[in-house]
Length: 282
Image (cartoon, rainbow, N blue to C red; front, side, top):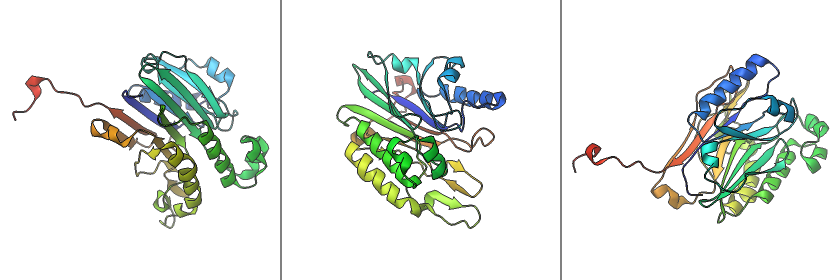
């Protein structure tokens, strides 16, 4: 897919909250994001089939959902009808792991686009074993091993870079660099503890699929003990696309009353040619 693309990823921390006021605030946030983006990738939606059917949705957007439970996980992809109209084939949602990873496959005369929304496991290993979310990994006592299993499943579902533009975004729950997690009490970094997970992500997913990060350096998660850069975006766009495209990526403002996660936007667009009357004198 060679067209323009404007995306934003946000961990809504229970988008379908049981508290009506909290749900309304999160919906209002998504409406604001929809005004400037073609694709909204949501994680930790806590969605169910009934809740999605009861929700009115966002005007001009179509939602695709992979459900977790009413209190855990869930991912969603909202796509503008304008972008969907570019693709002639019916959109197909592939659930790599229900509630954890889903791929929206779009195909048309302008090429193929795969949009991947992910929410990697977090919390205690005991809770994950009881939920049985990751299939074979449900018997693993180590939370890191469960994320490793999910990374392998994601890689197995990706299409070659020669066929489709693949965009992966969401909540990864590990950090790539030591300085990507800072303790609030000691002001020291602890992200180096995730080095092994990042090595596995790079060797098993990014390198085979030619994915690279749309890097922005700011923290995206605020907790009582630390701030971390857990929410990221990757794609397999060829580096030559940067010659004549504007590439943007940034974290948005904190909205701690709604979610402890910042949204991350990323986009590519073609340069706008000024009319002759507006061009400077050479």
